[in-house]
Image (tube, rainbow, N blue to C red; front, side, top):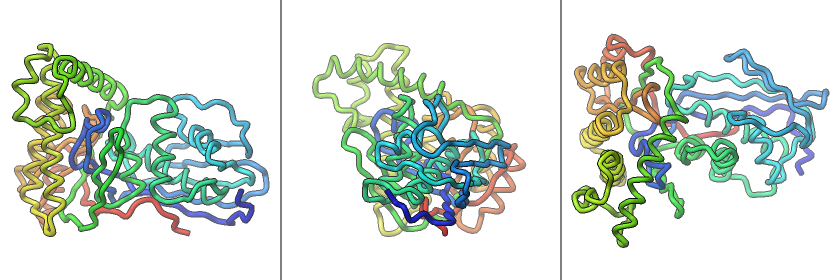
Length: 364
């Protein structure tokens, strides 16, 4: 246990956007995401009252935790307490009081992963303040956040949010049993995030679409012993679809096509020089599948995408669970202001250029 408690700890974690692979990670398929320069900021200072006091002025909320382990059992969605419980298994147990303030300019419930950013600053703070029985790096912090947000309560999400925010930069994640990731550090100019102002429908949408996709995949696997979701291609679709129930065909097709799009995008990010026009084309194709196969858009988001493309954007797509939330846009470098203006005029509640960020870190 770390007994040399730091008087003051400041942590910040970025938001994230998904470039490719929405509705793929819960199937164990890869995603390409990037951390963006919108932040969750945590400031913690030692107090003398033997409690962890967490103030979140942005949402008008305060939490108080006892030091030690006696804080009860967390309910679903209680990320702060869940993280404390997860970290107990790693030898991280609070033994000194701190007063913490958490603020953010990451939009809530907009598909830019404010909940995972909250977990990452909280987990980084706890490990920095109270120690841990493992070597601490960004990979461990990402894993701890994933355990707290997803596995502890058996939630339907994947690993994209926690690892893209924890690791930073642009990341390609193999999210299945053979979990791995590859980092890309070259900047990509022209990224814009636009918020619809309509809350995304995370749990219900993820659960519904995951169930239908897995049912379709199971039908194929039972009839085709050589079927492998990770290697199936669009060219294979006709032979597999004959085994899929009529009402599930579109979900199976979406899984295969979206995976193919992500693989094509990966090859682009591996190149020494990014072909942003090609990346934009692939974003548009991905959005088409998310919209027309999985029914993830709403009219306001359709209007935003149309407005961005009409203003000359190279690509635009909905992000995350869908039926609300945000879109990510790739504009030509220098066109960001023009595209942002068109997005606002097209109905976006907010729109702003973003840069790729380095991930969660200690600031002080």
